Image 1 (spheres, one colour):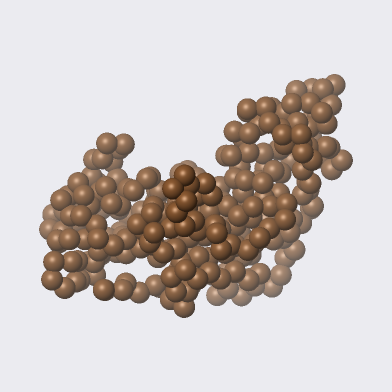
Image 2: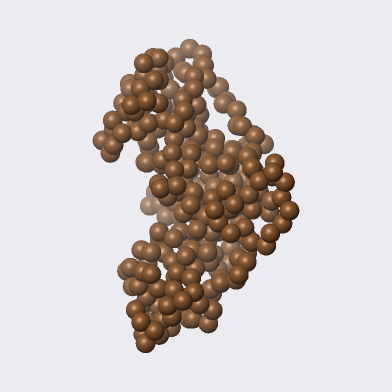
Length: 280
């Protein structure tokens, strides 16, 4: 678009501004713009358009409050210990319990789930009001590590463990390879493993072990990037991260961390204690 169309060619990209405003992830905002749902100064927007202070942005005819501060406000970040039997969705025709049910209410923003967990998987879920932060942690090109504790029926052979970290296993949607894989022991027919992946394909951990003839009986995510599931957060509980922790996460993903504060090297790591494997 040109300036004659009423949209300025300076400022910040529209999809980035909308994500910063907590409307949704950047990818979701790009889809909304492409579908014609967003206007700037009364003109239907296109991808790549930039907006500045004073521009009037609307989504489906409703005004959106822009956040174009030189030092953006810190987003909110929640850690939630998902229980088995909950869905990571706001809409479910079967009316099952949703992880969004107990989240704090927001005005003018919404909670964005960083990484999904299926109905029968428990563990760490991260929620944020920042679409930009969600994008940096979830987009495949950033290759953020996910760590899981998994209990299977049976035991992997040494050859299978080597294959999983070297060549990988071929699934119907491509090869999957674990960055790390360790044997955590077990009793009887059940055996525990701890593994690290840099992707979030649907049910990828379960499908991988099933391909090896090892059905998964328990699956729990214990880490996402530098964020660990603290042992003090029991199932169904949540905690909101403080300013130092949020700033450290923003710095780690390469996003502006707001007004600079003095943060120690230890705080910058913001890595919470390693979550134990519960062998039950």
